[in-house]
Amino acid sequence: MKAAICVAFLALILVPLAQAQAKALSPEGQRLTEALARLQMHPDDLAAQRAYLQAFPHDYAAFLRLFDLGQELYDGHEFILVLHTLAEHQEKGAGQLLLGLCKDARWDADAPNYLQHEAVAYGAVHTQMFATLLRRLTKTQRTNAIVFLAHAENFEGYPEFQEIIERLKGLGQNALAQEFEQAKALREKRQSRIGWVIRTEDYHS
Image (cartoon, rainbow, N blue to C red):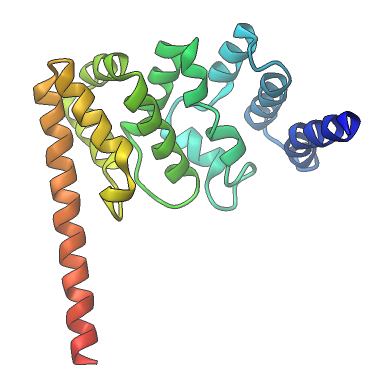
């Protein structure tokens, strides 16, 4: 039984690597794939964690070149959905990476959606560092990052966003919390308008 579990675990780790290697990867894609394999084999290794953060794309254009539709590592979920977990020991590095991407991001399905998930998960737990890093962005960059994080169909199913707001208030970051509240209100207003249009079309159909 233990042998079977071990084999299954190794398959889970090595399949993404094998799939990526079967393609003609760019140097960036190869480096990231190898860094992920090392991280998965040694998840508590601080050097492996740092190496992964260094190998991950650090600007949104590079992020899309790897993970966007039709790109070599599409849709990137196995690469992206580990980022916030690294923050336990790499709090600043993980936060810098996530917000460095979010400041230029535009929401879309797949990789951008996973990025949003990871950034919000990080912000809800590491709120003090999250706030510090947000304040280092320009006003335009910070606004874009917050609007990107506020992209939700239903905030009732997105409790981490409200948790960020409450934690910011608890830290005395009221102005920053207000920016999140404003982004949430704008998003809800837009969703309400879209819903009204759909209901009107249904009425006339």
